[in-house]
Length: 299
Image 1 (cartoon, rainbow, N blue to C red):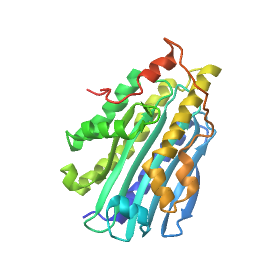
Image 2 (cartoon, one colour; image 1 turned 135 degrees about the vertical axis):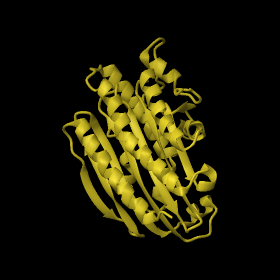
Image 3 (tube, rainbow, N blue to C red; image 1 turned 60 degrees about the vertical axis):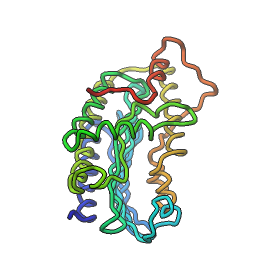
């Protein structure tokens, strides 16, 4: 049986691979690392990149924490155990060019004991402007990884992402979705825990490949002040989701997590224009029309 220590070590390697790939993609900025310890047990490596050629702000964080499970989390999980272990890699990238999308990825493992343990994670894309070719390629790449392990994964996990990454008070999705899964066990997945772990690692290693392809399609496009304004508005919706609905943010705050690491997902700048209305027939209107659940991007 794979151990929590082995999972954490592999996730650290994936963090290294991703940060190296993103530095190469940007060509200018470098990640700055801060190693931290959690008061209740464990710690992590926060890596932040800022003010690059492409990457305005981004984080690739690794953590492996343990200790006493707070009462609200115990109640939410429906468990009686007091001690927990959690490890994972979490990524959010905010580009400076409106034509390049925001991207998020998370792979994680949670354990209470030998019988209560699960994986979670996913990848989703939040374009400021939606390009259908990007959306199709992104989703097809995710489906290909899912299909290696189960022909049920992509359909289930895409629907889960559509429902999870949904800004209820706006009645719109955060972006074009992707896949999302949580509390995934061998019993639920129909494959072994080792295979679920391999699946999570494949997702982690897909991240730099798929993002590099999309970034390189758009990185040299010029943009207007109006298009930059739209980007800042879309960032505002991203912030709303992360602060109101995101489960990882809530878990981090409720387990006395490191606040700088938890909130690294927020952009440097975002705007909230009062009663903003897109112009009929505009690129902005087209993007808004595609911020909905149930669009079948992959074959």
